[in-house]
Length: 160
Image 1 (cartoon, rainbow, N blue to C red):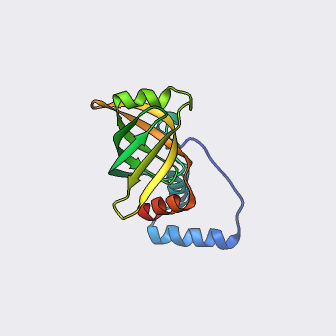
Image 2: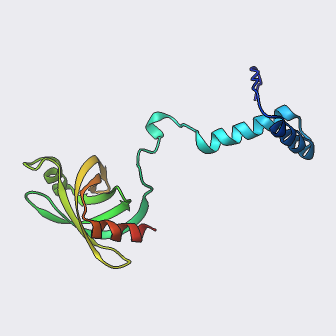
């Protein structure tokens, strides 16, 4: 990495002495130690990939394969939950079901019920956010609109 810019800053004498001790122990210059510390901090805490690749979810997702039942305003179909998080899910539905999810009087809300492998049945109302074709089906990324406390707790316990 080419070093073209100088940065100077004020600090306490104790911190400077500690950094110099680290530099001596690592057989590095003080400047090199400070650069390593700053680089490590930025990589761990502030690494910003391209906007389109940035994670948009508030909650981490868990990859699963849970059979589910999806009910739209005019039909009901079997489906498979592919990803699950505290904020929503990605569910793979038959192509004919996807039309009912995106069109209709209740504009985009659908109900999903499923049994968690850890036990307990969950029933939530979802709002689709993204839709994409996937091997003969359609994957729908949806956020939870209405999950009562008991259902939310079941999902949370399962994800932990």
